[in-house]
Image (cartoon, rainbow, N blue to C red):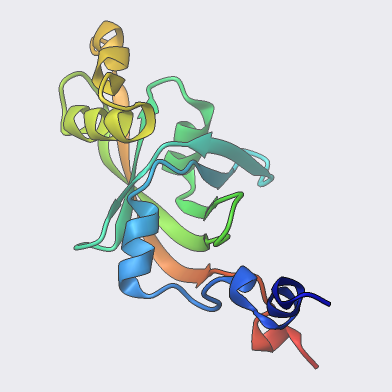
Length: 167
C-alpha cells in the first residue's frame, strides 16, 4: 500500500469540523446567499413549505423575510405565527440550521417601507452586484416585512452523528 493510501485511510479530515456551529461560524454561514425553507401552517393546519430569501440579524438574533403582498404563505404567517426554518448547504462542511420560531409582522404590505433596503441587501447577496436591478421594475409593488424570532435553534456541521443518536 502506498503512503497516500495510508494517509487517506487514517485521516479524518474529510469529516470537516464536526459539531454545533460557533457563533462566528453561524453568523458567517447565515450571511451567505443560501436559501431558507420556510414552513408555515395553512388554513387547515397543514405544513406549507416555501423556499425564501432571508437576512439574519446577529445583533437581535432574528431572521427577516420580505414577502410579496399576494404571497399565500405571508397570509398564513400573519394568521398563525408558528413557523420553522431550515437552512443548509449541499457541499462540505454540510452546515445546517433548524429553527422553530414565531413570526411577527414588522410591516404590512406597503410601498417604500423598511423592507426596501432589506430586500436590496438580499438581492445583492443572492444575485450579486446587479441584484438591486432585479428589484427596480417591482418597487411599486407592496411587500410585507416579517421578523422570525427563534424559540429553538439547532446547528450542525461536518460528517458525523451527534452523540444523542448513538445508543
